[in-house]
Length: 181
Image (cartoon, rainbow, N blue to C red; front, side, top):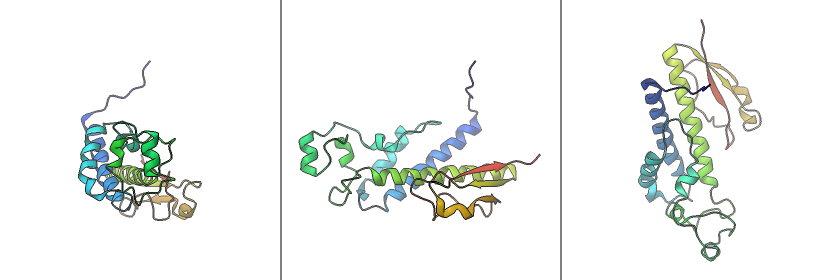
């Protein structure tokens, strides 16, 4: 017995919007980091549009870390931990002089969490709008202890986009549409 759901056209449109919002937010967030090579924003946008598929969650680090693996000597020359899996394509997207070599992919991970939270919260707010319902914001106490006071029910007009300014770097807060019958 299969529990798979065959998406309808509306579900696919909604997912395309989520992916589009994610990509725009992700690239804009990358522009906040000195570690990012800003001249590559359009290239990353194209790369993500080609590689992100409906109803799949791909790690952007894997998408951006493409090409031939660097040799141990190449990594040593760049001051990168030789045990890290770094490919030559990734070097196009970073400013090697300003990147934190102890956490080479950190800024990418932060940007991805931020963009996913933003895209998914926008989707839930739009769903609640269509249903003319409210939203329940569940704050994850572990990842976002400074946001716990925001836990509660919101109308679509006053529901803030996630992550909140007080959320942590790996925000796990979520909206749930509350439907009244």
